[in-house]
Length: 398
Ligand code: NAD
Ligand code: MG
Image 1 (tube, rainbow, N blue to C red):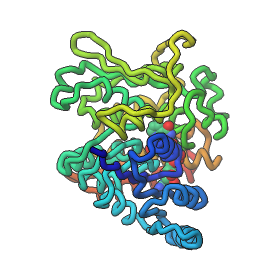
Image 2: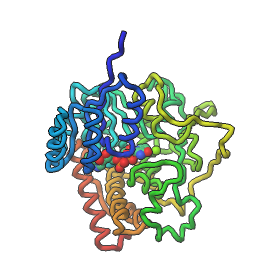
Image 3: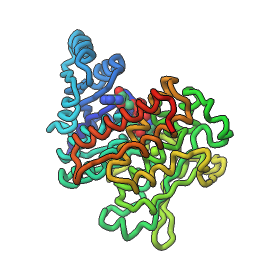
Image 4: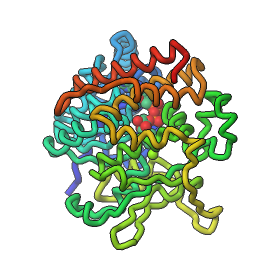
């Protein structure tokens, strides 16, 4: 019997993860159908994707851009409907003709559509780690109540997921602790005294992975790993003390599960996001990802080291925020999004990112009530951004 095609919506299709997802899909003609695509500003790229993939719907947040895309597609006779606005993303994520949602938007902007997909019981492929950092409890509850399948796409979390038993109920019995590996980014060997002079172009030049600009800066500060520790706390329901981080510069071991009996399970592969994407798309099957195979005999050797606190002061903020009042991780995320954007715009220096993050975390009381909903979290996100921006305007963040 023919397998029904899996209908996918890709939120953030013009980004790095979005493009890699379409690349995996292209390896499997007939297996997947692209039902929806979405972008933020890059209309030309979304237009080209619509011409190629002919989705039912394409979404842009801004109506003026949506109008341009609508006209261009109509001129080509492409029947794709073009929707705009934040609600349109949530409608796409929950649409009845969508089986799987690839959440590849960067930042807290991805939380609402992730919740919509989870509540509608979709297969949710989660690259957008910020959604869990902002609304971990809410999103995990929506996944459980909506009967959604949550597949981690972040390579570390996919690695851990691949090492765990199928039955979620067995996870706790197996795990002693998790080790998230980190490449150490471009500044692993740089003199910390010179970090204040780092330029945006130096910060986004990652040695092992090609990624969007925000996550590339996060990798350089290791805030990416801090966000991933928080992400792991929710995905695997573990106390923060059972989450550890180790630098592994070759990015071959993607993370490890240290079991209660002392056995260590790891997932290995070349650093290529198409592997976790293919795994998420086809789970429990495995399909061709297009990634180069690991050649053990050509490996330069695998090494591991402890993260240096002087060089990466942002990493401990994960445990700090997890131990703080509810909402602290959302505050940290908002401050970091604002600080990274300001750094990329050359408004603040590289080391200011950490100063803004700590000062916002310390200076803003989250004041979330019991069981906060999406609006409460988005309000907190706005307050934290405003706080961070005010600190940057004063230019005396600490
Ligand atoms: P990117 O910047 O390359 O792409 C982001 C996408 O989101 C683009 O399509 C953009 O149009 C869209 N977008 C941005 N802001 C938006 C907004 N406000 N509303 C709607 N759409 C918006 O980023 P990326 O590197 O592909 O990362 C995407 C997510 O995946 C991030 O959360 C990142 O942390 C995570 N992730 C990425 C990688 C990687 O290798 N790139 C690895 C692991 C996890
Ligand atoms: Mg990662």
